Image 1 (tube, rainbow, N blue to C red):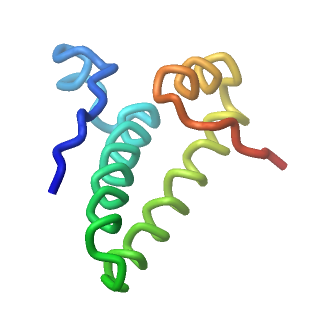
Image 2: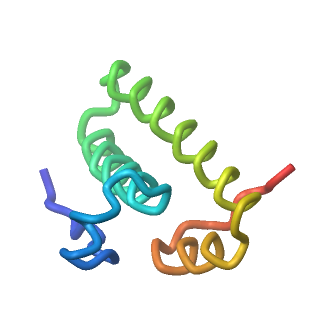
Amino acid sequence: MVKNTFISVISQEEKEENRGSVEFQILGFTNKIRRLTSHLELHRKDYLSQRGLRKILGKRQRLLSYLAKKNRVRYKELISQLDIRDSKTR
């Protein structure tokens, strides 16, 4: 399996302080999504991992929509840092 470079946008001090913050959770979900995506490229018929990926995508989507409603500036910064596309908000 090819090792992907995972994102470390948040510094070490911030990691210890803000483990429960929305940005930190989105960062963790994004790393999991990228790891599962690389796994599924090799193992196409791993349906349990596909289900897990869909669940994590949904959780990240809900957190992103929450962040977009609460603080639009932080949302835009996080989207650009993580290099994920802008999602549609309701």
